[in-house]
Each structure stands twice: as C-alpha cells, then as structure tokens.
Length: 240
Image (cartoon, rainbow, N blue to C red):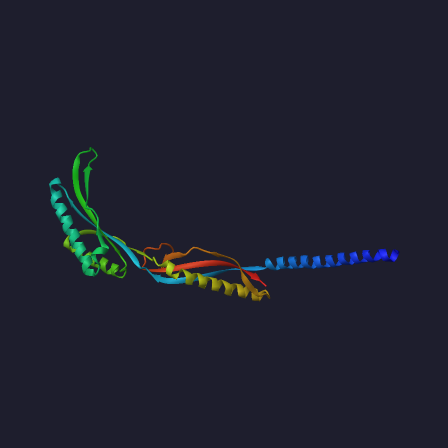
C-alpha cells in the first residue's frame, strides 16, 4: 500500500523536473538570442557626385540720369532704347525671347543739400532690369562678356552675378543612397572580420541630408556651374 502511494508522487516529480529543465532551456535560449541581438556594428557610408547646373538666373540693370526735370521724357526714351539694345544682344548670343523678361522702368529723384540745407544739386534717375531664366547655362558667361561691349556705347549697366542651380537631385538620389549603403556595409564587414564575427542583416538605418555645394568653395551652391552633391547614411548591422 505504501509502495503504491509512492508511484504517483514519483511520476509527478519526474514531470515537474522535466518541465523545469525544458523551461530552463527556453529561458536560456531567449537570453542567448537577446544577447546576440545587441551585438551590432554601426558604420557610415558616403556617396558623392560631380554634377552640372541645369538652370541659371541672371539679371542686368541699366541706368540713365539727368539734372533737370525737363530731362525726364528724354531719359525715358533713352531707357527704352537701352532695354531694346540689351534684348537684341541677348537674342544674338542665343537666348530665346521666352527666356528673357523685362522689369518696369523705375523713377527716382534725389536732392543734394549743403549744411545750410541749400539745394546744390539734383538727380533725376531712371533704371530698368532685364532678367534671364534659362537652362542654357553655358551661354551665361558668353553673354556677360558680350554685355560689356555696351559700355563704350554709353550704356551704364550693372552686369549682375548669375546664379546657377542643380534641380535634378531626384534623378540621382536612388543610386547615391544605394552606393552610400554599400559603402557602409563594406566598412561594417571590415569591423566584423576584425572582431571575428559575421555581418548580419540591417538593424536600423538613417539617411542624412543631401548637400549641394559649389565646386571649389566651402559654402554656397549658386555661384558655380559645377556642383558637388554629397550624402552620408548611417547603418546599424547585426553581428552574428
């Protein structure tokens, strides 16, 4: 009778022991996996491209002036003539009329007085602008040089500095991001090899901002036809 009562107890004890062993295995396996999961390597990948601007913005300003109010009508006619001359030259260089716009002719009156507030001089000034918006970026420098030929004709101009823009960033974004990520993986693989590990899948990734900069300059992105485009990605890999 005693022996019979011990058998169920022994059987129950065996089941409990097996359960504890199995539970210990799964807990241990979970801890092991968690430990592996925090073994990571973070690296950065760089991609750069040398690109050419595809848009340009350029403004030319012209001025005429006189000392008498009666001069204003003639000054206005002279301003219109100067404007036409500039338009003609731009078209001759190779710009289409649709790429050229003209601003209004502004009028400005200035007085010059001595310390006693007596009027000693006065100026009646008219000024106008001609603006070029074009994708013919290579014509800009040629046009600026040609514009200087108007100076001996008595046309007073401000030959403004052009601005150059690269607007096709979306066309090169995918390939640059891919290249940056590949370079990040190469760097991470070197780290993993030196640590005696193997590189696993990506745990996380962060894409930096695209930076466009004029070639040969530390800052600015509108003064040079050629630009440097740069992107850095940060990738975190699992180590197996």
